[in-house]
Amino acid sequence: MSLTLYNDLTHKKEPFVPLRPGHVSFYSCGPTVYDFFHIGNARPFIVFDVLRRYLEHLGYKVTFVQNFTDIDDKMIQRAHAEGVEVSDLAARFIAEYFKDADALGIRRADVAPLATEHMPEIIETIEKIIARGHAYVSDGDVYFDVWSWPGYGRLCRQGLDELEAGARVEVGERKKDPLDFALWKAQKPGEPAWDSPWGKGRPGWHIECSAMSSKYLGTTIDIHSGGVDLTFPHHENEIAQSEAASGTGEPFVRFWLHNGFLLIDKEKMSKSLGNFMTARAARQKYPPLAIRLFMLSAHYRSPINFAPEGLEQAERGVARLRNCRSDLAFARRTRLDEGADAGAFLAELEKLDADFHAAMDDDFNTAAAVGVLFEVVKAINTRLKDCPTLPAAFFEAAEAELAKIDDILGVIGPEELPKEEGPEDPDGIGDAEVERLIAERNAARKAKDFARSDAIRDQLAERGVVLEDTPQGTRWKREM
Ligand code: AMP
Ligand code: ZN
Image 1 (cartoon, helix red, strand yellow):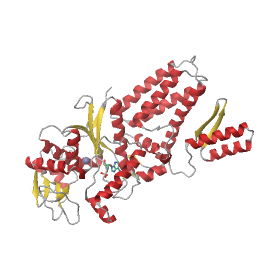
Image 2 (cartoon, helix red, strand yellow):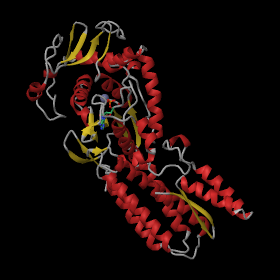
Image 3 (cartoon, helix red, strand yellow):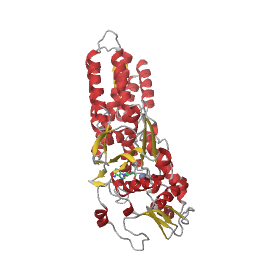
Image 4 (cartoon, protein in one colour):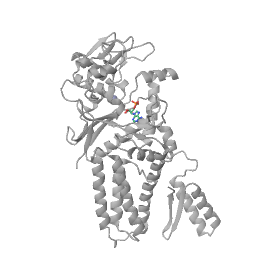
């Protein structure tokens, strides 16, 4: 099997082969940094992070670019409302983005460019589009002329006439056609502005992605991703701009990938509907690993409903995964025996490993891949339960498989979770504190102070930690 991806340009799954052997260029549309991002925005960040990790696992060198939109109407309005500079607002929410994204295990992009730091590239791209006859200047604005671009509507699969029927004509617009879109907007009073050949102004929303992707990844890139709401007009416009500017006749993007919506009460979660939960609030309520597992338990193109039951189920799932790994470590310390036979287990694991790859190769079907991960856990747990002793080969294979899958999905996490990553639970207790209390309890038992040792056991039980005294020592688990 080899990786296939569903390409929104062709509406079918296609074998993924990068343009440059061994190297993948990948651009993902990033957030507009006027506020905290919500848990719906987190979906593309998480799922495409997993695709990037899987591509790396397959041996590709991936250059991953994700922009920050730091100048647009929303940025200007929010900065005005808060009485701050647009650039200060952007700096604040870029820092907040990284706090949430890092906590959610989203690896940082190789390049995270800002629109405002790419004005020369943006202006140069617009100049090329004008020079090739696909844009016009109108009163200090510059518009893309959609009728001059024969392929317009290819991605969203609508012809210009159909699109025209749904387009609104705004009063006072300086464009020739309602579908024409702004590449450059003349400065309005009180707005930040940059010098350009057309006077002072700022870029339209779409152009930054065309300018920055070609700067960092070249004029034809392998993968471009974002939420399904970006298909039209954002991505349709990016194609028109990029291909008009490059003039190579080559496609701007080879594979277009869009994630489905995260819904809340059957509606798209969005800032404008006011039905959103920020990623910050979500990770105070649920462990970040559970949020990841929840997102990855659905196929990225299907809608997913954000509901407490789903998150709680994911939380139990994460506990099951983490307990399996710590049970393995404990059994390795206490039940290792070279005489035991791991043959059947190794064969089962090999099959499960192939299933995992088959799932990921099938349009990175993380829902199926997560299913396989739990099969792996079941196979491990069965041996841990049934076999009095186990050989090194069993432990090595089991640990390596969990580590490998986790390197891609990121749902088991490090052995010791950073304190600030845990949910905001007043009864919550960190691993180090549990270990400390167990050591104290062991000392109390040795000194025959059973009142103290029982009190510690009860105290831990109240905080969701169960102890088990075995001939090999005390084990602990978080209650599921
Ligand atoms: P924005 O900051 O609005 O440009 O959004 C950042 C990313 O989140 C884009 O890829 C959007 O398509 C995506 N997005 C926004 N809302 C949702 C949602 N409810 N579910 C999934 N993706 C979303
Ligand atoms: Zn974009």
